[in-house]
Length: 445
Ligand SMILES: Nc1nc2c(ncn2[C@@H]2O[C@H](COP(=O)(O)OP(=O)(O)OP(=O)(O)O)[C@@H](O)[C@H]2O)c(=O)[nH]1
Ligand SMILES: [Mg+2]
Image (cartoon, rainbow, N blue to C red; front, side, top):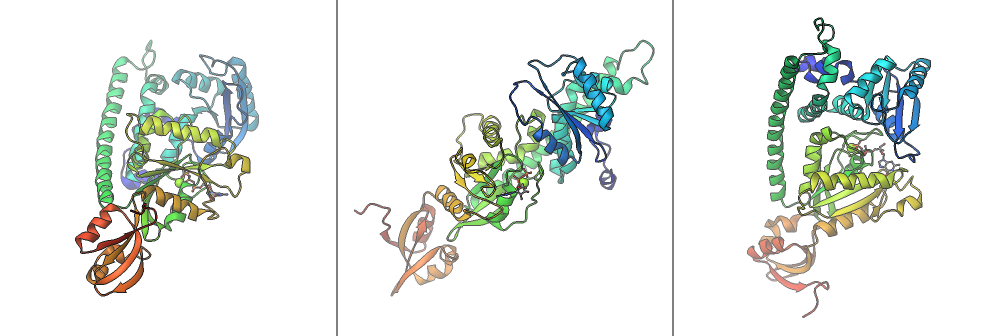
């Protein structure tokens, strides 16, 4: 509220339409309801409880139902709805949160039957994003996601909204009002899309500059809460926000860090994924998806301590496949980083192929750096160069700490050993350097 006033912003359209449903408030307490359509999920509501907790809503009770097909009117059926209502009265819950996606009609029927606010998982995630989005761009992305969620629901929610003002015999808002509302929302969506395109162009510009700088870009992607920001901090000495909550990071962040002697990479922290990512939310991941698409290397961070690690892993892979590399474009290599081995059982770690580390405890980070370096600097050759003294002083390549080792000094310069890319060799040769020997990696002539 305060923030809106400070910015002199108008009240967001979304809230005009969704009313109190647009937001869960810190003072509310919830009952969680999940329908296990597949009938074998042991921890069906664990993640929903974490999400509620992230949104600041304590969970008072949970209800799980096994059924093959959702009920058309109420998703859980009449009997179960009564049961949930009685439980909500008993524990004093203000809001009922469903793990499954509800149709607008189902949500409305449930709200009437239960006499309290009813929201679904998608809406809860949207709300978390809305609460936590900090930058202008993140806020716009969330608003866009909310409006897309709202659009197909306009008729249902609109009805409740306009009941009071409706004339005798009118059922819900007239088509005219609906049309006006739809147009209003469409206009806002277009306006936001336009501004986000500008933001995306600016990111492309920045990316070009980074590409020019020739430092490889490494994107850290993974399930939410897997430890991406913790690892970024370890690799780059940055100070990214780390928290044991879902979606702590809602913006990408780029930081530089060393991966081998004198060799650096740009590490990009991203927004975490979640299973069944609400489709409307995909725009909020634009920067993350771009970071993955244009990276020289993707680190897929897996929290192997989570019982659902294998499923988490596949849902991240699937999101990357679906949202990032749809048109069979060339994919950057992906290195799996198995994180939190300090608290994970061995058998869980063995489920995966990759580098096992603990970002928090700083375990095996040297192994990780080595692998990163061998992947992003794979074109390097070990060479001994004869470097004229002038070039030794002027070329950044030879001044970077740890990049080269001096073999000896001779009359016309110094002989140095190091690993160099073709571009670097070309630059060095242009400055008068000569290759005097190849490393053992190159077969002897
Ligand atoms: N035990 C243990 N905890 C870790 C490790 N790495 C990260 N954590 C904890 O896991 C939680 C999430 O860490 P973050 O770095 O915020 O995770 P993230 O992937 O950036 O999460 P989001 O930004 O929310 O998607 C924090 O409480 C970290 O302290 C680790 O190696 N071991
Ligand atoms: Mg993070």
